[in-house]
Length: 65
Image (cartoon, rainbow, N blue to C red; front, side, top):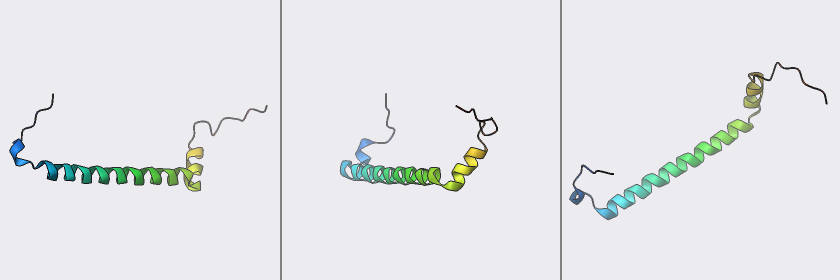
């Protein structure tokens, strides 16, 4: 159950809705930017080389088929 401690009379529904929409849009934009940054990092040659070097499988001999 949700309990609101503030008085409902203090909040204008239209202003509150507008504020929530603005905050939601900001969060969505931030999430989109974060996903793009993660994509760029994951495609970076330097990142790929570092992750391959620190891989637990890096020192294992390769099995020939």
